[in-house]
Length: 244
Image (cartoon, rainbow, N blue to C red; front, side, top):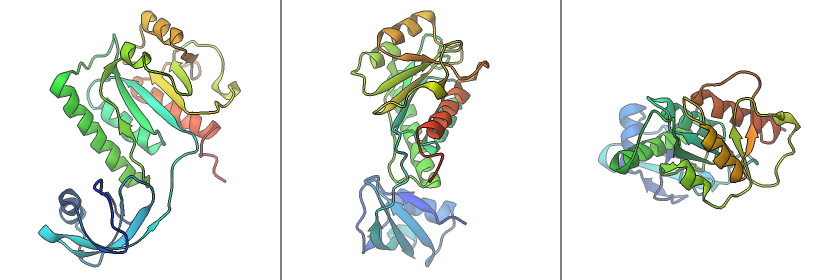
């Protein structure tokens, strides 16, 4: 069984008896049913991790930590996912799996055909929820750096930002196989449309912003499938899926 891992955003104190944050203590004791003497791993998002042993549970839950181990499980490919808002729990699924697949950031955008509409406090609460999903995915997958979930913005507002690295927009029917594209020198961003797809105006806007059209074979993928398929393909071609 994999040693339980917990995110401690306030920072760690290696080689010490460390008081666990309340949320971590609750999860360890009430959810995972850990007890004194059980092993765990803590990370704070700054790189590396600390192995430890649970010393106490309850209100003063603590663990005895060892040194910070310089363990990194990040892909050499820095890929970000720009996901048009999707309905139901599809966004939860996309965020969770994108983190598992190595995305360094997930940016939700409001598209013309997005079924889900978010703004104000409702949008802020949903982003906070997705950020916690990203944390849990890091705990499960072994990542020690938590991807940032961006605030919900319009596609136009997102595309107005300065571009960093190569940007692809998924568009069924686009020409040019991914396998024949040269690996970009810097980071990669992929834009995924909503359930109804990008509108012609949005595709034109993306093209004028320097986004290269990209298709994944002859089939049309659902919005919750498309981004994950692209991430897996990119990790296979340019990332760390081939292994050593």
